[in-house]
Image: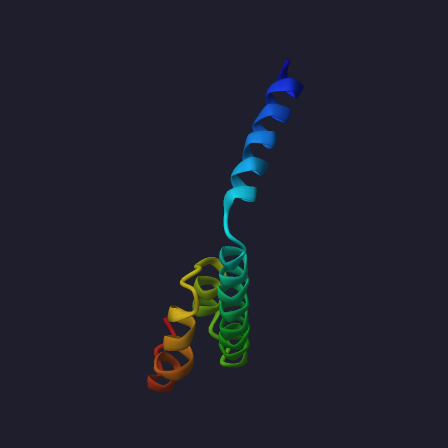
Amino acid sequence: MFAEEFIKYISEYNQCLDALPNWIFLAMSVVGLWSLVWKGIALWKASKYKSMPWFVVLLITNTVGILEILYIFWLNKYGMKA
């Protein structure tokens, strides 16, 4: 019984994904790559400055690069180590 419901749910989910235009997947990939690059740079700088609180915050939150860019270019220059 559970398996049949699960298969039905997955089938409906796949139909929804098939209805989406391809540019949405491309846009999601670009945003994901953008976020990954900025997160990597920010985490590297936080570990370089031995700022554990910022490292944890940057690791857990997902702000599509906004918090990471702020940390890289502004926060760590003014000595804000959380």
